[in-house]
Every structure is written in C-alpha cells, then in structure tokens.
Length: 162
Image 1 (spheres, rainbow, N blue to C red):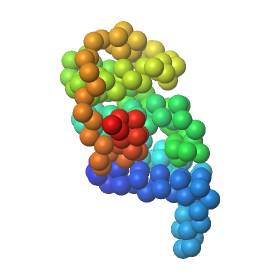
Image 2: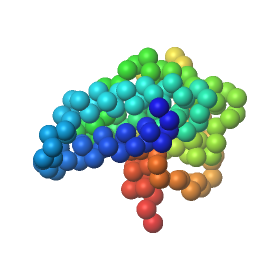
Image 3: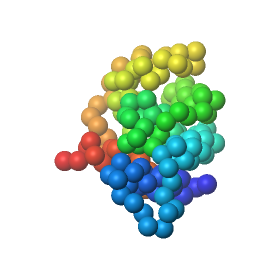
C-alpha cells in the first residue's frame, strides 16, 4: 500500500471508531466492530513497518501508532495491541536513522514529545536508549503538516491548532 492509501485507510478506520463511540448506526451494515478495527489497524501498522527502513514518513506514522496505542484508550483510537516484531522493526529503523544522524527536525521533535511518556519505550531498551536522544536541544516546534497523514495528522492538528 502507498502512504496515501494507508492514510485514507486510517481515516476510514477512525471514522468507524467515532461512529461506534458516538453510538451512530450506519444503515448499510458495513460498519466494522471495534475488534475488527483493531485488527485492521494492526495491519496498517505492519504496512508502515514494511516501508519504515526506506521512508521516514512511514517511520513517523508507525512510531506514532506505537506511542498512541499505549497513551490513549483503544475505544477512542481503534488502536490496541500491536505485533511486537513489527514494533521492534520500527524502533530498530528509528535507531538506524539516529545512528546515521538522518533524523529530520520534525521526527526529532516528535520523539522528544513522545518521551514525555517514556514508559512507551521501556520495552525496547535492548535496541536503543532514547532518553539521551530526547534531551537533545531541538529548538522550537517545527511546522507540522497534518493533511493526508492518517490519525497522526488528526492528532497533531488537534494539539497544534493556534
């Protein structure tokens, strides 16, 4: 799947989650259950991991999903248990970018933000220790593009609205 297809899939899944949460019934009976949405989100996360070693945007989205799965309730996000092997690949790809000094300003800022919930990365200490990286000076918040970025875009838009 392409990044655009994945973003659109995420928006569809998120719309289903909101319909369930708000108690809306879709008349065509094609709405997914929350459990089905969570399985579909696991597949989306896996697709991002397939691209994360060669595409920084896929890495950002995969990392966001991992963080979001542990910091927000699954009944509001549709994201629940993810595949650990897939999570570890994304963390390893992130470490590779860090080691090569190839992180862009946006990813560095995002990682610093995620480290406010450092327990999210505790399971991956054997791969990388992010606390040292997160203390790096990154300056101000970069302009974050929010369109066509799936649920990550929705989240960043909600907290960066001016």
